[in-house]
Each structure stands twice: as C-alpha cells, then as structure tokens.
Amino acid sequence: MALDRVLSEAFIPELPNYYKGKVRENYDLPDGTRVIIATDRLSAFDRVLAAIPFKGQVLTQTARFWFDATADICPNHVLAYPDPNVVIGRRLDILPVEVIVRGYLAGTTSTSVLTKYRAGERTMYGLTLPEGLFDNEKLPRPILTPTSKAFDGGHDEPLSGDDILAKKLLTEEEWATVSDYALRLYARGTHLAAEHGLILADTKYEFGRDREGNIVLADEIHTPDSSRYWIAAAYDEDFAAGRRPRSFDKDFIRAWVGERCDPYKDPIPVIPESLIAETSRVYISAYEAITGQAFVPDLTGATPLDRVRANLESYFKR
Image 1 (cartoon, rainbow, N blue to C red):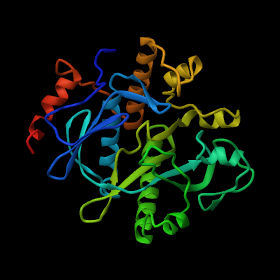
Image 2 (image 1 turned 60 degrees about the vertical axis):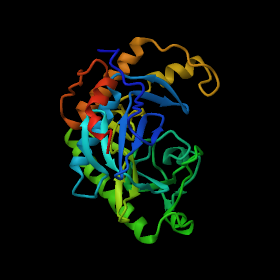
Image 3 (image 1 turned 90 degrees about the vertical axis):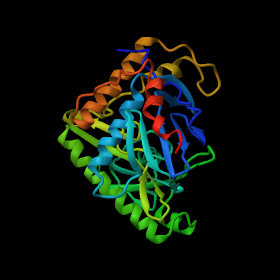
Image 4 (image 1 turned 90 degrees about the horizontal axis):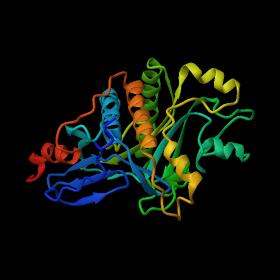
C-alpha cells in the first residue's frame, strides 16, 4: 500500500475561481465548465480527519461507472475525465433539495427513516409506513425521502413533496422530473448491484439546472460515500439475527477518533498508519465489488498533485 501517494490538497493557482469543499476542490472556468478534483480527504464530525490513499480515485471512478451505466435514464453533468481524480462537468445551479431513495428501513442520522420509525413516527416525508417493520427490513416499495440542502452549513431538514411545492423550492414539473429520475436511477442501481452480489439499500442524488433549464444529475452517484451497500449473501442471516447487515465498513477512523476525544471540540489525535491503510483497502474493495472491475491505482507523476496538474494543463487558459 503506497501510503505516501495521497492527494490531500489540490490547489492549482493557474485555474480560476477556486472553491474548497471538505473533500472536493472546484474551479469554475470562463467557458461555463467546472473542474472538480476529488481529494483523498476523509471528512466526519464537520471536519477533516485524515487523507486516505486512493479514496479520491475510488470515488471518481465509481461515479464514472454509474454515470456511464445510467446515461440513458437522465442527463448528467460529466464532460470529460482528464485524470483519475478529476471530472470536468457542466456548471449547474444546484437545486435546493437533495433526494434520498430508500429501499430498506435503515439509517443512523436524525433524518433517516429508521431513526424516525424507532421513535414511533409512522408518517414521514409525506408517506405512511406500515406497523410491524423491523430494523433494516425491505420496504414494500422504494420511497423518496427528500431533504432541504443546507448551502450555508446548516442542517438538512426533512421534506415532503407538498412541502417542496408549498415552499416553492421546485416547480411541480421539476419535482415530477426529479422524482422520476431518482426512482429510475435507484432501480437501475439495485439491479446492477444485485448482479455483483450487493444490495443498494439507499442512496442520495443531487440535481441541478443547466443553462437551458434542464434538470441534470450532479455531484456523484452510487459511490460508497453517497450510498449504503450491503453484502447480499449475508443479508438474510444478518436480518434474521437482528444484526446490522454486513457492508463496506469505512468508519474505522470515525469510530477510533470518537472513542478518544470529543471530535467536535478536541484536537484530533494522530491516526495510526495501519488504520489509514485498512480504510484505503476497504475503499478499493468497495470499488471492485460495486463495479466488478479491478482497481488500478494511478502511480504516475512525482506526486498525485503533480500528475493532476499535468493532466489539467490544457485547462489553464480556457
């Protein structure tokens, strides 16, 4: 494992209109395109904990697999892949609604259907779930659980379709289009995941409007960071035993940090290289299981940033 091959930062001064997110770094070019570089940073607790070798390549290439596999369902923002960690996309006006499609009663966040169901709620997101469901049980049909998109660093809030229309977050036509796209994307995702021995339990989609006003799929799709995958062969046994279904457990570092400090307030302790290496292996194994393809790390360039810079040179003067 090449632990020194990490892309922890991706600042390239020759590119204009720089914006740094927790994981991705973006540049808006004058021609209406956006350079999106997936770094290897691992974010949790509203802060960056570590850099995981090849994580950015895994996420970019997993999304590439799914963008290609779903291009017949809806348009997406992708224009080119000049580097394994980089996508060139159309610049979009991101919609103020994120759409999570859930096929199972699962989740850990305050907005998840399992958290709400355990608290006694049966009506949520404008839907009514039946009584008697168990943790991680398959739902009668996939459901849409949209949330507001907190652009200002606030918290996402659950929404129903009626809420979205009443608050004028989307028009009726836009919500119908987004709903249709999301359910069809999830159906394609569950089908292909099943062929690879996986269950796509739930996933998040982000959409935007292009210059012509068309709804376009943005960000990423069906990656280990935006989706919950379970191992299909173990699901029945785990469900019967009341266990959390086996998955690609990438939360070693999150759990390790949480056991040693208050990660929202305290300095983060030095994370062992063995933990970083294991997390990298999990991301790589997830890529291979999800796509059915062998992961080939790009080891060209003196450093990953040198490689990215070289591959983006043709965009410096656009």
